[in-house]
Image 1 (cartoon, rainbow, N blue to C red):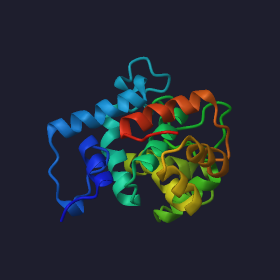
Image 2: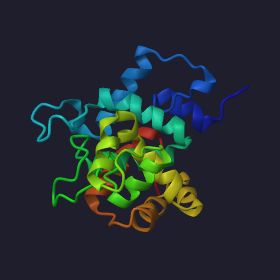
Image 3: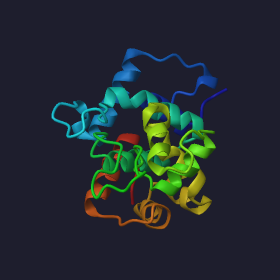
Image 4: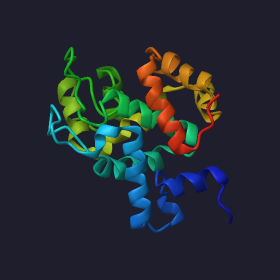
Length: 209
């Protein structure tokens, strides 16, 4: 069976490696994955000097968990992948922290920097109940496991954004990305945030319009 062009490109970039396809990983693929993340998040080449060293992850450390999240939640298009990657990199200053320190909202965090209410929903979807209704305890469970920590972006897109938003991202258009930011993330499409998306879109081979 011939792979669809989009899926083949994702695999080539090392952003998607579906276990069901039994595709072998190689040093070249892993190197390109890390290299791609550093292009999107330049400071992710090292954790030296990070303000919260215990929270920081380099591109090499982040890549496998991002790959896994795309497999788990079925992110298979370059446009959606670029949106998730750019959001996580922007929100965490290139994967340097996973807890909201300024202004310090209790329970806000993960690599998607989700609000406490979404972290509660995310934890419930993972059947994590030890944190109860304590936002900080729930966040602690999520950030303690890199798979859950880096999985939040893909989970949010696939469970909290409408089909229309996802369809817009798949087109690779600037308008589609802006709608994702303003209508699903409910924040502002600032120039700094857009710069992350443009880098991610270029890495993923998305043609923005």
